[in-house]
Length: 82
Ligand code: FES
Image (cartoon, rainbow, N blue to C red; front, side, top):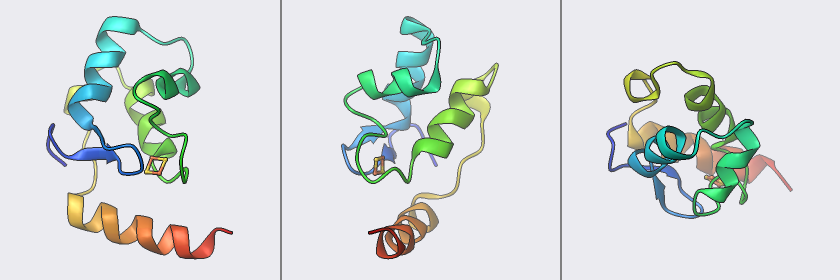
């Protein structure tokens, strides 16, 4: 996943926006990333990935799935959740 790819597909929040939010706002909990354009407040698929970036010392170097795999796995996740 590159910086301009969407990390939160529900709210079209790019990886770049999330990383910028982490650097400038320094949220004290991963859930505060919801203040970044609503990231993580839709289907919930992206929350573990948001947390991974939040936990990282250098979020810009974290490896995340490629966008196609990410979107496909999210679709399967959404099919399973009520
Ligand atoms: S992809 Fe982020 S809440 Fe659905």
